[in-house]
Image (cartoon, rainbow, N blue to C red; front, side, top):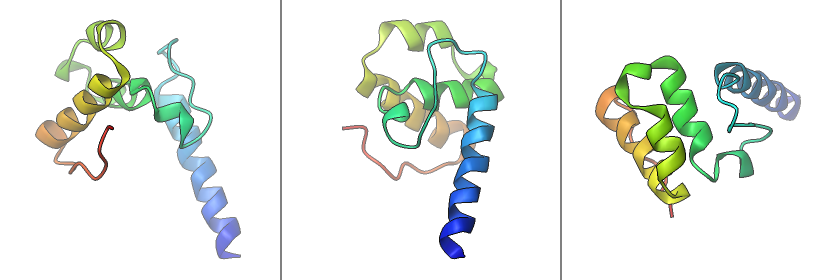
Length: 89
């Protein structure tokens, strides 16, 4: 039963992320692994809720995946108080 509850919670969270990032054509979140590797999903999620923090087009078009991930982690830490728990590398 615990496994079913976790799966259901993951699906709800995935649905929320997809809804939050639907206006970003470069972003297609289908899972919690490969969909996040280029940094676009994380930045789009942040931007969808706080568009005042950075220019989406600059981040989406001019940075490498590692730079985009680092950008998202830094924005989350500096402006939202979310600590960096993973290394973009």
